[in-house]
Amino acid sequence: MSINQSPSNLRKGQQAFAAYIRDPKHQPAPGDVKPERMAMYRELFFNNVEAFLSSNFPVLRSLSSDDDWLQLVQDFFTQHACASPYFSEIPEEFLHYLQNERQETRDLPFMLELAHYEWAEMALTIAKEATPPKIKAKSDLFETPLALSPLVWPLVYRYPVQRIGPQFIPDRAPEQATFLLMYRNDVDVVKFFEITPMSYRLLEMIQEYPGQSGDDYLRQLADSALKKEGTAQSFFRNLADRVIIYSA
Image 1 (tube, one colour):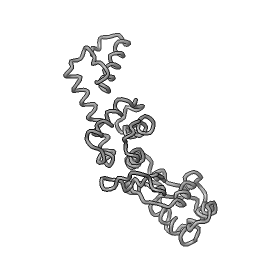
Image 2 (image 1 turned 135 degrees about the horizontal axis):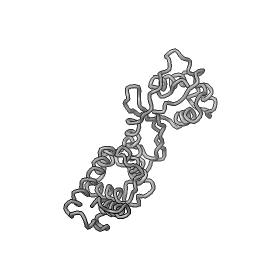
Image 3 (image 1 turned 90 degrees about the vertical axis):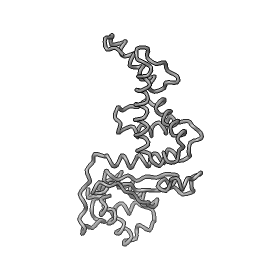
């Protein structure tokens, strides 16, 4: 591709180059680049994207045959127009593709949820927010204004995504949804644990309406076991010790 071209011709050449790289079966190769060089460029781009997706979605990759996985990556590579040039944002672009563009009826029914779960772990790992200060051990959490750490994500899925793997591949969603709390702790390790629907609702309230006391949040809940003083105190203290909640 010669640089001694008018801006419009150069742009057309770049577009033709990119179109062939993305979809060599249906797009003509640029006439001013040797075929073997175009093949090398194409393989380099595709392999980089495939390797990045494999490393960020290891469980999803492990559940796919080589042919199915390469077809999935190729379809993403061909069909999805990434809005960001950064490799670190390819997993999020892949999620957008699965949610809005993927139309393969043979896909695993939990593919999107599993991909989101794997993406969430990566996203929290590289999140730029700092861990909030830990609430003092002697603080009365019923009286302390609370907020949810920005490094905490309450998640709900139709499938038990945290259990899915080669040894467990559900073919239908269970009757009960799966509620998870994923967070990055004060030593920058991403962890998760399963929570109840009521705990999920409580964490949602703290996230949406920060600054109220633990007692205020509990009063807004429907009748639940969390309202028992010992249970609630233990629940809040557990969250505070993990820096899931902090003093607003």
